Image 1 (tube, one colour):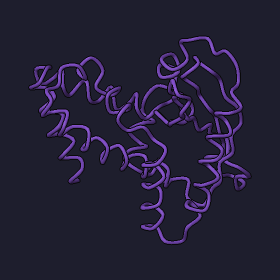
Image 2 (image 1 turned 90 degrees about the horizontal axis):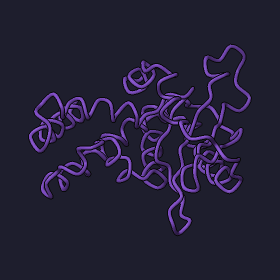
Image 3 (image 1 turned 30 degrees about the vertical axis):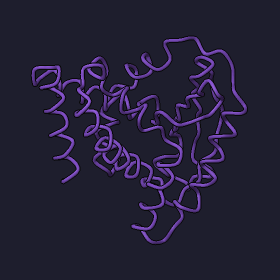
Length: 209
């Protein structure tokens, strides 16, 4: 993939990520969630078709802000260390992570500029955890993305509200890659609050790059 974020994500072994994401036997398709994701993809189509690149990136960020649960993802990628942050670290980490993850989603989605995506099916991993699959609609002959399966992981709250909590392609997932990176940084810097400080510093460096 052209962007740094996508190159990093898709270096992971697909088999390992698939084992993590689909360890639970899927129950059934979920039409309501499929419709939810298709609505987002329909909203994204004219954005991805935009002629001005910067405007497209800005509009993708707005879309991510509306539909992606960054707080939930930000906690997930910390793994066991999410419970070890001080209140001061939480206040600094979550806004930084929001900016960082939004940049990754923006750069990854921009690789599909000019394309439209269509939902192809879903599986319920549980009542609140649903995987929706999609693909490029009417890809150009020879397109490198023609056979790519793009996944969306949807969380359903107790109140029935839906949000995106991960995305990926061909069984390799953004949040899982981020969790692997982040927990390694924390562990390699002593773990606990010291390790979290190192992670916060690393995120700041990446945002400046």
